[in-house]
Length: 315
Image: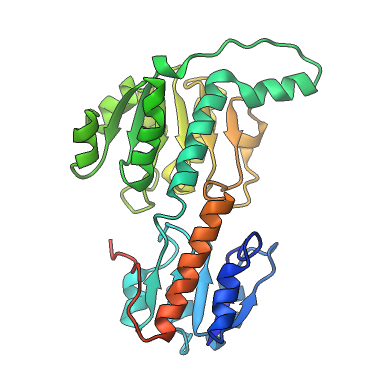
């Protein structure tokens, strides 16, 4: 079975996922780690492969329908906004994903970003290196109200990490959440959350309902001292509106790990009150190992004639 790997890293920190594929007779090709796959790049190489181990790049319908050998698209990660699951399945191509594997890593990065912005850690580092000794006065997390939008796998983990700090937590989700009831977390509508939260952190998938979720209208509802965290998907936040809000100090700060276009080279780079990271929410050794191994195991299941371990949902 021929396997194309277009997500990187893969097998860099731990060779076990690659070895599992080799042990089952797979022929594996990993694309250039420094290259961002375009639709044309994918179309030029994918038709000869049986399996695609994919990252976050787009997998267009007009590409996969021209891949007669393709039997499995295994997403190494949790997001499914880059592949039309229903369309792929209509062609007999299974789609799987690894939603549990990166959840702890993304949650920990979220907490890291909140603390960084509350205490000006990254900004202070820049100032000291530039020769400026500015002892910035921040705030205690325990005195903040943190609003979590999306109380799923990652959102619930963020809430658990916040518990020892003693801060108030409010949340919003499209469905009732048993976890919120157990933890006495008030479930509120989005407007109430935006108005009352000192920290707003986003943990929703990218769908038509969540695209441009945080825009100029939302940013105007938020407190002037509010902090926005986005470790979900770039298009959930309107980057132009965020730039305007941060430039005018209508909100205090933001931390963004995901962008509409990656690698990011936009205007937010010029601002001191935004923390920018390179889509590294899942980038811990432990999470990468688990994501890659789970994706490799999906290939083994396919070879064994079994059904997928974690099929992608249609919604």
